[in-house]
Image 1 (cartoon, rainbow, N blue to C red):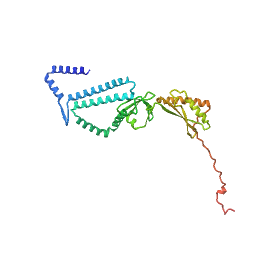
Image 2: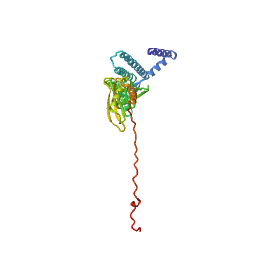
Image 3: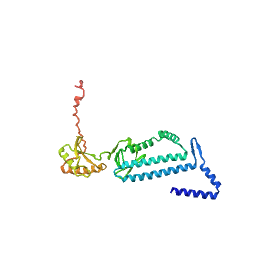
Image 4: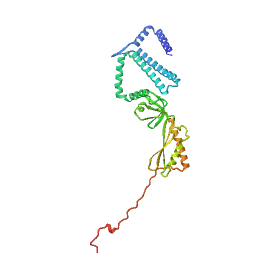
Length: 318
């Protein structure tokens, strides 16, 4: 496609020369290649066009190569999807960086020293006005190399929870259970508290708090909670569910049912299934779940003293 475009440009240029005369062509070509000097920078219209073309080709090749590499690595089942994504992204960034350096060299006739000076000046601007963008970019490389969060991980940050779909230079795309896409700055994933449900051991302990009335039989409550966790989908039998008696609350005895699962991204669904069973079993066995109550007590006013006792003695009264 690029070769065809170049051929068309040459044909158009030749036709223009044939129609207007070679003198006009020579003057036009001389104007196009005329170099303007700004300090150590030499630039011409033709060099700008070549530099832009090189940059476009570099972006096109980097994207195509990254996609091809990702598909080739996808066939190797032993390679983790997150590692595959990291390799493809790094290859793309390397190609883009090489393309940018070559484009600057061709467009402005810059050597490596001049390019270093330009990036030094840019770093000063970043320090004053683009520090947040620079922080996001640095955080993106931290995630790509350290890989605390990978593609496909289930994460919770603040009130948002979902699956990581992509990790870019500045942003991360997270898809929630409602199929809503959340675009998060990568610096938030590095600087804030993040829960990664898929990190390390796939087994995750899911706590389910329950409160019962003070007159409840705690042995019966423990047995019922264990029974409610048995046979639930995605709940492991080993380690087995267990119950903890947490504290004597203001209006209830507070327990916590602990279950294990290898599907941490479904922890909300697992909690819902178990809560349904707890409510049904509690009603069958007469176990009451209390609700906070407030009791007001009205104290009667103290008896009023006799008026004669409150008033001073009048000696002048007969």
